Length: 278
Image 1 (cartoon, rainbow, N blue to C red):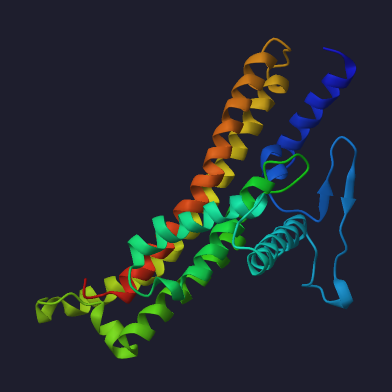
Image 2: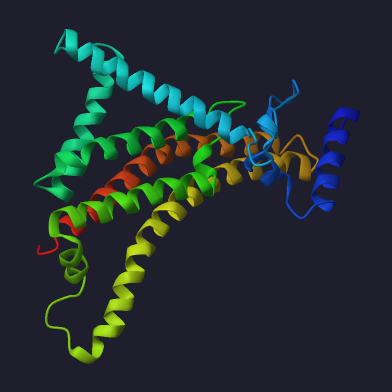
C-alpha cells in the first residue's frame, strides 16, 4: 500500500483505540460541523446570543433544510391547485403520494372522521420521506437516525392519538374505554396499569423503530467500506464496494418503507383511540 493509504489505516486504528466510540459512529452521530471530507469541515456557531444551550449542529442544519423543502413543496402544490385542478410535474408526483396516504393509510385505519387527522399524517409522511432520502446524498446527514428527532415525531403522534380519542369519546369515556368489557374486578388494577403503559409503549416503539432502521443501514455501509482499510488490501475493495452499493440500494427502499410504516402505525393507533367500540 502507498503512504497515503497507510496513513488512512493508521488514522482509523488510532481513532478506534483512543475513544469509546468507533470511527463509524463518529460519522453517524451529530456534530458541531458540516463534514465535506475530503474537502474539509465547516464548523457551526455555538452558544448563539450568549445562550449555552442554543447550539447549531449538523442535524439541526439539515432539520431546517428538510423543513424548508417540505414547506416549499406543499405550498407550491396548494398554489397550483388554486390555478388548475390538473397536476403537472412535481405536483403530479406529490398528488400520487397524497392520495396513497389518504386511500391506503388514513381511510382503512381510521375510517369515518379521517379528514381531521390527514394533515398530520401527510406532514409526518413527507417529513420522514424527505429526511430519509436527503440523508442518502453525499455530505448530508440523516436526521431520522437521531433519536431526539424520532422521539419528537413520536411525541407528536402520542398527543394526536390521545387528543383524537378524547375528542371523540370524552376525557373520562376515552380512558374508561381502555379497559376491556367483562374483566373481573380483581384484575382491573393490573389491566389498568398495562393499558396505561401501552399508551406510552406505542410512541416509544415508533421512535425506536425509525431510529434503529435508519441508523443500521448507515452502519452496515460504513462497515463494508472499512473492510478495505482494516484488511489493508485493495483486492477486497471490489467486494466491499459492491456489497455497499447493494445495501445502499436497499436503503432507498428502507427510506420509503420507514416513512410508510411510521405513518401507517400512527394512523392505526389513532383509529384504535377514536373507535374504541370497534
